[in-house]
Length: 57
Image (cartoon, rainbow, N blue to C red):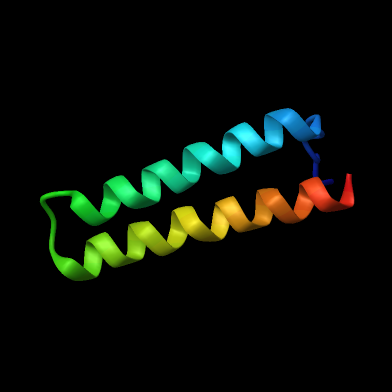
């Protein structure tokens, strides 16, 4: 059974903004380019998914 976390739209926006900030921080990290890009994409994917949830809520 899969549990779904339901958050209000404000909380979803805050989490999406946090993931966008983490994505930008990942680009500036002291890591290899491939690691930075993977982290950036992971955080942007999460931010976009949260924003899509907000639209459906």
